[in-house]
Image (cartoon, rainbow, N blue to C red; front, side, top):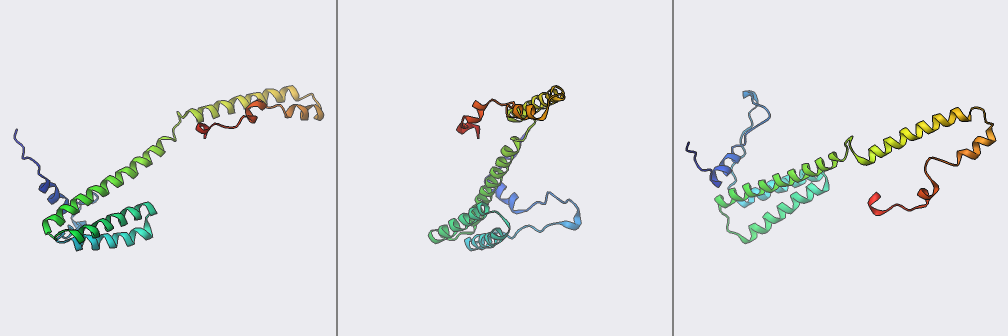
Length: 174
Protein backbone atom coordinates (compact mmCIF):
# COMPACT_ATOMS: atom_id res chain seq x y z
CA UNK A 1 0.00 0.00 0.00
CA UNK A 2 1.38 3.39 -0.97
CA UNK A 3 0.69 6.45 1.14
CA UNK A 4 1.54 10.01 0.35
CA UNK A 5 4.28 11.43 2.55
CA UNK A 6 2.96 14.13 4.89
CA UNK A 7 4.99 17.27 4.51
CA UNK A 8 5.22 20.21 6.90
CA UNK A 9 3.20 22.35 4.50
CA UNK A 10 0.41 19.75 4.59
CA UNK A 11 0.25 20.01 8.39
CA UNK A 12 0.19 23.81 8.21
CA UNK A 13 -2.60 23.76 5.63
CA UNK A 14 -4.65 21.27 7.67
CA UNK A 15 -4.36 23.42 10.76
CA UNK A 16 -5.41 26.54 8.88
CA UNK A 17 -8.68 24.93 7.80
CA UNK A 18 -9.91 25.03 11.41
CA UNK A 19 -11.86 21.81 11.86
CA UNK A 20 -14.59 22.00 14.51
CA UNK A 21 -14.45 18.76 16.48
CA UNK A 22 -17.26 19.62 18.90
CA UNK A 23 -20.31 20.08 16.70
CA UNK A 24 -20.74 18.13 13.48
CA UNK A 25 -24.09 19.63 12.49
CA UNK A 26 -24.37 21.83 9.39
CA UNK A 27 -26.05 24.66 11.31
CA UNK A 28 -22.99 25.32 13.47
CA UNK A 29 -20.06 25.44 11.12
CA UNK A 30 -17.24 27.63 12.25
CA UNK A 31 -15.55 29.61 9.56
CA UNK A 32 -11.86 28.88 9.20
CA UNK A 33 -9.55 31.59 10.50
CA UNK A 34 -8.21 34.08 8.04
CA UNK A 35 -4.85 33.20 6.60
CA UNK A 36 -1.92 34.90 8.26
CA UNK A 37 -0.16 37.17 5.78
CA UNK A 38 2.18 39.21 7.96
CA UNK A 39 3.86 39.34 11.33
CA UNK A 40 1.57 42.26 12.20
CA UNK A 41 -1.41 39.87 12.01
CA UNK A 42 0.26 37.56 14.53
CA UNK A 43 1.22 40.42 16.85
CA UNK A 44 -2.31 41.83 16.71
CA UNK A 45 -3.78 38.42 17.53
CA UNK A 46 -1.38 38.03 20.47
CA UNK A 47 -2.22 41.51 21.77
CA UNK A 48 -5.93 40.69 21.71
CA UNK A 49 -5.40 37.27 23.27
CA UNK A 50 -3.18 38.77 26.00
CA UNK A 51 -5.82 41.37 26.90
CA UNK A 52 -8.39 38.58 27.14
CA UNK A 53 -6.03 36.39 29.18
CA UNK A 54 -5.35 39.14 31.72
CA UNK A 55 -9.05 39.21 32.58
CA UNK A 56 -10.03 35.56 32.34
CA UNK A 57 -6.95 33.38 32.88
CA UNK A 58 -4.43 32.87 35.65
CA UNK A 59 -1.22 34.94 35.69
CA UNK A 60 0.93 32.05 34.43
CA UNK A 61 -1.14 31.75 31.25
CA UNK A 62 -1.24 35.52 30.74
CA UNK A 63 2.55 35.69 31.16
CA UNK A 64 3.02 32.88 28.65
CA UNK A 65 0.93 34.75 26.08
CA UNK A 66 2.79 37.99 26.83
CA UNK A 67 6.10 36.21 26.28
CA UNK A 68 4.89 34.88 22.93
CA UNK A 69 3.69 38.38 21.96
CA UNK A 70 7.03 39.93 22.95
CA UNK A 71 8.89 37.26 20.99
CA UNK A 72 6.87 38.06 17.86
CA UNK A 73 7.48 41.80 18.30
CA UNK A 74 11.24 41.19 18.57
CA UNK A 75 11.17 38.79 15.63
CA UNK A 76 9.28 41.35 13.55
CA UNK A 77 11.92 43.99 14.32
CA UNK A 78 14.75 41.84 12.92
CA UNK A 79 13.18 39.80 10.14
CA UNK A 80 11.88 40.59 6.68
CA UNK A 81 8.10 40.27 6.49
CA UNK A 82 7.23 37.27 4.38
CA UNK A 83 3.71 35.76 4.11
CA UNK A 84 4.98 32.18 3.93
CA UNK A 85 7.20 32.70 6.98
CA UNK A 86 4.24 34.25 8.84
CA UNK A 87 2.23 31.09 8.13
CA UNK A 88 5.07 28.88 9.37
CA UNK A 89 5.52 31.00 12.51
CA UNK A 90 1.80 30.74 13.21
CA UNK A 91 2.06 26.97 12.95
CA UNK A 92 5.16 26.94 15.19
CA UNK A 93 3.58 29.18 17.85
CA UNK A 94 0.42 27.08 17.83
CA UNK A 95 2.58 24.03 18.56
CA UNK A 96 4.06 25.85 21.56
CA UNK A 97 0.56 26.62 22.84
CA UNK A 98 -0.36 22.96 22.47
CA UNK A 99 2.72 21.98 24.51
CA UNK A 100 1.84 24.56 27.17
CA UNK A 101 -1.72 23.26 27.43
CA UNK A 102 -0.49 19.66 27.56
CA UNK A 103 1.93 20.58 30.35
CA UNK A 104 -0.88 22.15 32.36
CA UNK A 105 -3.02 19.06 31.83
CA UNK A 106 -0.13 16.82 32.89
CA UNK A 107 0.41 18.83 36.07
CA UNK A 108 -3.31 18.57 36.81
CA UNK A 109 -3.19 14.81 36.34
CA UNK A 110 -0.17 14.54 38.65
CA UNK A 111 -2.06 16.40 41.37
CA UNK A 112 -5.20 14.35 40.75
CA UNK A 113 -3.18 11.13 41.03
CA UNK A 114 -2.34 12.04 44.62
CA UNK A 115 -6.00 11.58 45.56
CA UNK A 116 -6.27 7.81 45.42
CA UNK A 117 -7.71 5.26 47.81
CA UNK A 118 -4.41 3.39 47.80
CA UNK A 119 -2.43 6.30 49.27
CA UNK A 120 -0.14 5.09 52.09
CA UNK A 121 -0.86 8.03 54.37
CA UNK A 122 -4.61 7.65 53.91
CA UNK A 123 -4.35 3.94 54.75
CA UNK A 124 -2.35 4.75 57.90
CA UNK A 125 -4.96 7.30 58.96
CA UNK A 126 -7.76 4.81 58.38
CA UNK A 127 -5.94 2.12 60.38
CA UNK A 128 -5.23 4.48 63.27
CA UNK A 129 -8.88 5.57 63.26
CA UNK A 130 -10.06 1.96 63.50
CA UNK A 131 -7.58 1.22 66.30
CA UNK A 132 -8.56 4.39 68.15
CA UNK A 133 -12.26 3.61 67.81
CA UNK A 134 -11.79 0.04 69.05
CA UNK A 135 -9.65 1.14 72.02
CA UNK A 136 -12.17 3.83 72.97
CA UNK A 137 -15.10 1.40 72.80
CA UNK A 138 -13.27 -1.24 74.88
CA UNK A 139 -12.14 1.48 77.31
CA UNK A 140 -15.74 2.65 77.80
CA UNK A 141 -16.81 -0.83 78.79
CA UNK A 142 -14.04 -1.04 81.41
CA UNK A 143 -14.61 2.51 82.71
CA UNK A 144 -18.31 2.02 83.26
CA UNK A 145 -17.87 1.24 86.98
CA UNK A 146 -15.13 3.85 87.71
CA UNK A 147 -15.76 7.25 89.21
CA UNK A 148 -15.02 10.59 87.50
CA UNK A 149 -11.62 11.26 89.19
CA UNK A 150 -10.15 7.96 88.03
CA UNK A 151 -11.28 8.61 84.43
CA UNK A 152 -9.64 12.04 84.24
CA UNK A 153 -6.24 10.63 85.21
CA UNK A 154 -6.46 7.96 82.51
CA UNK A 155 -7.61 10.44 79.87
CA UNK A 156 -4.10 11.98 79.58
CA UNK A 157 -2.55 8.69 78.53
CA UNK A 158 -3.54 8.40 74.89
CA UNK A 159 -3.08 6.10 71.97
CA UNK A 160 0.11 7.87 70.73
CA UNK A 161 3.14 7.80 73.05
CA UNK A 162 4.42 11.19 74.31
CA UNK A 163 7.83 10.63 72.67
CA UNK A 164 6.17 10.80 69.26
CA UNK A 165 4.57 14.15 70.10
CA UNK A 166 7.90 15.56 71.32
CA UNK A 167 9.81 14.55 68.15
CA UNK A 168 9.77 17.29 65.47
CA UNK A 169 8.62 16.20 62.01
CA UNK A 170 11.17 15.50 59.29
CA UNK A 171 11.20 17.49 56.04
CA UNK A 172 9.87 14.62 53.94
CA UNK A 173 6.90 14.09 56.29
CA UNK A 174 5.26 17.31 55.13
